[in-house]
Length: 183
Image (cartoon, rainbow, N blue to C red):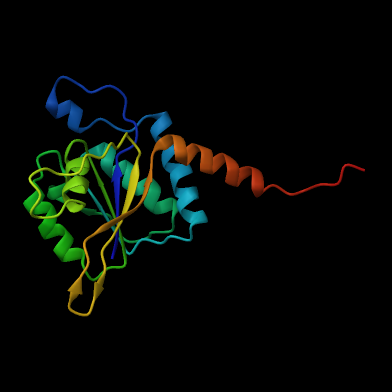
């Protein structure tokens, strides 16, 4: 399984009231980033088998935009494990439920999504987890492999922050333009 962990796109300033903050949508920059990210993922010929999201509006919008732009046409599944109150134990249960899928996208929040990624990349016997920085709109790809009875540890194969996505988007847009003669 390839697990794609995505921190929701830019959603403006945090609100003091938790009830209104839960309903905070992504902003214009966040919508633009989602489209750019989806186009970069399309250039990689990536299709998601399953898209899961935190129940908060900004995550659902991020999942919807990226999913739609990459051709995902099934309903987005809401997962409490990806909400700000989600625990690593709930996240592990969610992973177990998704184990038969090839490419899974999970959209969540900081600090949990970053902590979950760090915990996945750290051996169970370690006393601390790996430190990973995920800005808003950052996506990470973690590969899980099972070969017979040998279980290999999860491997971080990609970490794209918004700056890298923007650079890849710009370079792919330039290379896809038609070449015209200057005669």
